[in-house]
Image (cartoon, rainbow, N blue to C red; front, side):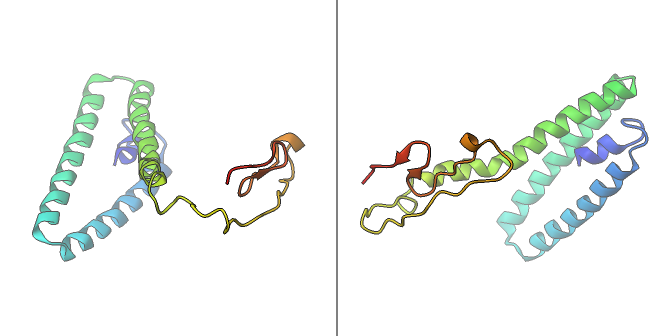
Length: 149
């Protein structure tokens, strides 16, 4: 929703594509949330509605503060754009926390050394040869075979 605020003419003029694309994405997201709310139980429905209320309040507060306190287009674009980049980065970095917590579980570890699969290295094209060696399953062209058993 912050990208919709960013695309508004008082914040960032001449950005019709930003507001069109993000407006369409917002409508699709609302349809998805509506379907989720339709088929979820009461406890989940209340939780999602509370999160949506907090999000609408936060975006509304940013919009009101930026439109009243920042007096130039450049300043408004910088403030709202910084929020957009920050929260966009958080959105794409959030799954990494699940990856870190999963890496320590027993399901990810390979315990048996008898069942190791040997694979050869392969080279990527277009890069210097030292940077293109890909390590696969414990063997590196640069460092040699791994002695982990």
